[in-house]
Length: 154
Image (cartoon, rainbow, N blue to C red; front, side):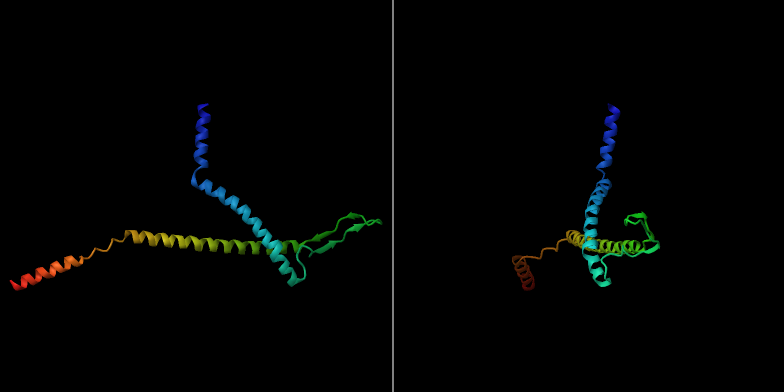
């Protein structure tokens, strides 16, 4: 029982170490972010690109090496052999769009992080600056003038 408890303590220390928790959060957020990016690619970017090129997907583009063989009933006996270069192009386009989205997200997060760091540095510098020495009060200045005038008369 003691060895199990020791192992559990080690596991607990491992799990709650900062890097592991940060990584877990990153994986969860990354999974959610990938859904957003996939929707951007499939639902917004590709239809717009499809309007330009005349097709919403490149996946239909192929080079048929051997056409499909059909029987008299129209059933496929032997499927076609084709080079599906359109699927490859589609994946390249998806990658480029996803990479651009990730780049933009990192730029935004970096900018926000930089602003926070700059603000923290300014606050730290303001806290380190010694307070300006308090000047003499009006009464102290008047007393000093009075004493100087007394010295001149004497």
